[in-house]
Image 1: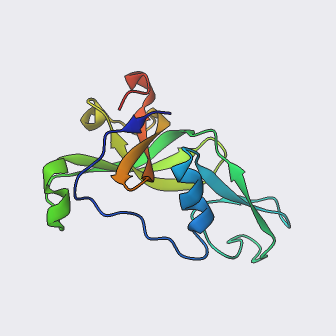
Image 2: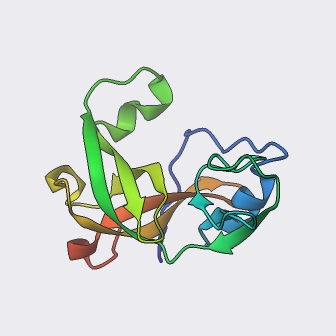
Length: 145
């Protein structure tokens, strides 16, 4: 799991009570997801209650940081000037090997060649001041971002 060079001017994550442990783990270069201790469901994104059984008996577990591209979009026009230097870029839905689906960007020199079904591995994008954003690279990219 590598760290992408700092992306200047991009927004930093904003944590709330439900997501603070997620962002703290990201600063340690770890991807964590929620596990329900009532029904054993794994889910993403950080929330206070299980989306399957509505229990609040949740814990954080480490993800292996590997998955498959479920769907993707190549962004060619920006809605925020902070992302202008990134276009074109890929936003994807990733099916983590543990089961949950999450949204992230695909980084790397071959990101625009992404296909549905591609294997991806975790990397981190530096947003400054120690803030790291979990992102992915195509597994055929050898994990280099």
